[in-house]
Length: 503
Image 1 (cartoon, helix red, strand yellow):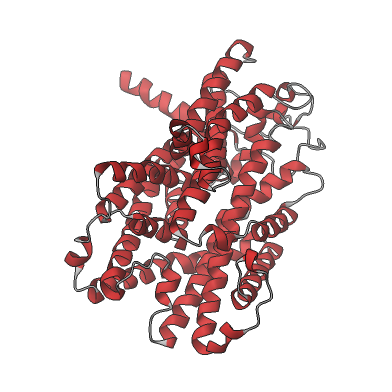
Image 2 (cartoon, helix red, strand yellow; image 1 turned 30 degrees about the vertical axis):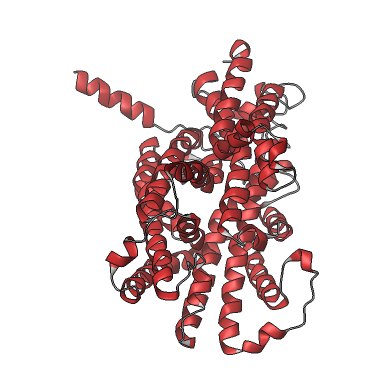
């Protein structure tokens, strides 16, 4: 009897209810893109979520994530362990935030209305969208640079095209042209609609693992076997040096998926059950990230043996191959797989976020175009110019913004509302989530308090203020930016909201 009761409880917990009834369809807060997904369209199972993460993980930034740790001084097992721990940590908010999406069928911008208010939700949505724009720019730069390297192999004179941009832009003319062309291709796919990218995702799913394994075998062969490659020692001179690098690196690993840990409801809203999204993500995220990162670690370690220097950028490495045909095939493949990843990972969610600003005026395509423009203005070529900038300036900096949002949303859903939401009120300007004129000021206060401790460390990192102008312990908090923001904002929000519970 006990077994039967436990089984029934589990079935009830996993049961999905259609929450689309009672919603005011002519509300300014409603659009087809933001509406709850009806039961009939919730078709994603465990394998779909596993495949999503395998596809997301198999990308050039993942390779660069691992190789940047080697360039930073870690040996192979230190880098792999750091990546595995970071992805296991970020899996927790990923599953927790995904719960509401699977239960109520709502996307991230709508879920944020419960904690920030119907208008206040635009604040976390825009912060997350801007970060996604940065990722869109980085991926577009990678794809465009791959085209440039292929072009340079066949037409070396492209390097001599007169310089059009001032020095502060940090951009040469030829790479800028290929970047713009690849950007236009991305925008054309947005115009055609996301459905047009399905074939490219299939191509990527089959090709990129094969290409990655081919690169691994090349590294092992050219590096005289796996033994010498894995024998490369750590560059840290003391344990203190290692730990000083490890903690900010771990924060960077968590930050790598900090955007998806917030907008995962955009995907779990299609789940058949809670079990599907939980199992799919648990099985695939840490394992696929770690396995693909291992290839990046081995290949990057091998470059020191083969070339006498550590080459952390796979595009630069591929450009060193002598065969024009191999370089061309590799670069075209990188461009196509990057295009598929970019649309799936970096267009869908920010487009929804921008649509949330004005559901009546901004649709998916318009949101996609806004994402594309901001992706250029963020200067992505500077964000990944070196491994330290990639981790310390980019990954950690934006994790200091997104960590607090995650803490607030999880505390609100699990501790304040006990997983109970009134979905129709999320689309009602006068509903329970309107708070004061659409803003929950407690959430905004908690967000600001969670961000503030990381500001001094960020300013010293980008050299906006001298290092000795800030107490060392205060600037050191920046190394734990995501964790500091997550727990500080979550606790502050809990303290402020507990006496004011609505449900």
